Image (cartoon, rainbow, N blue to C red; front, side):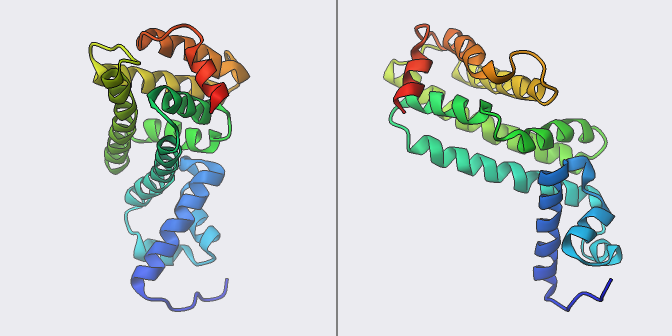
Amino acid sequence: MSRAARRPPAERRAELALAARDVALADGLAAVTLRAVAGRAGVAPALVAHYHPAMDELVASAFTSVVAAELEEVRTLLAAADGPLERLAALLRTLLDGTRDDVTLVWVEAWALGRRNEALASAVRDQMDAWQALILSVVDEGVASGAFHADDPAQAAWQLLGMIDGLNAQALVRWGAGGDRGPVLARAVEGVLGLPRGSLATAAAET
């Protein structure tokens, strides 16, 4: 391998962090190793070790980069929807349509790897909090408008997040409802939030 061109330290660190993120998206978080990141960036493994001596922290950074980008994308999508019911329908549709399985894999591996990587575990907790806060904002809006009914909106948001995560994790091994995850979850969500049966399907069809 030819010697990497000199770059300012901050630029090089950012380049390697981006390479780690790309490895995570392409091959999963468990694939973020010294050699894999070096290969993706086209540099020697020693250079990665020099700029990122703690691989646990680089893995955590790759996880955060992947899932935070998805969160911002979904937040933008929901902001464009008209009303809490439409936002909820858009949320379920985009998270269950199978196009985000690469990010789901990163999440699933992060939960497992985080048992032995505290930097990663901390990042996972932070991002789960951020997702719960986004879902809670939709639930709170719906409760305030009278569209949703929940005695404990925060608990309802956690429940919705858990159901979404569970169904998506199952889909990685093609178990259960498969392509019908959306209708299965919609019925459960309607029950949690006191919505009439079929209201989410109607809202999804109108958005």
